[in-house]
Amino acid sequence: MTLVRCADCGREISEQATACPECGRPLRERSSATAASGAWAGRPPYFYEYKSQTILFGLPLIHVMLGPTWLVGLRPARGIIAVGNIAVGFAAFGGVAMGVVAFGGVSLGILCIGGMALALGLGAGGIATGYWAVGGIAIGVYALGGLGISVHTLQNDPSLLRILNPPPSSSR
Image 1 (cartoon, rainbow, N blue to C red):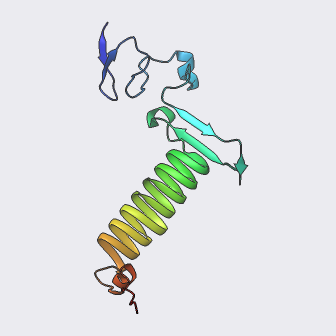
Image 2: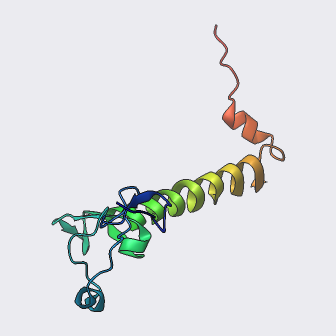
């Protein structure tokens, strides 16, 4: 049995394997008919898609699209609740998430939490923008973070300290 290296992850695997057991990359070439149609001969490895039958506002209630980008391409999950590499919906969870409420590596929307949160309202993350921004680098009207760029920060607006630490109530 001869071992070959996977082009994606570098793991040594048998040359008789059809796909890498580590990352799922197909090792055997597709037939010419399958390659011409762009379809897989069978179900692609490490790919999952679920789309609920319930439709609201022209979108499925839940849409999940997961798999390696080289396998599924840049196909976004679109739904009221969307989960995927790229997710677009009311509530979006993914590597790139766009929605009213977005959680992801890069998130865009009204309420965003992620590595880079680009929000219109509240943004929280490593780099956060928004009306209210909380993060390592925070940019907004109200900013709280390691580097706060704003009209109202802890450094230039002492009234924020009163909001964050209300005075103790006196007991009689």
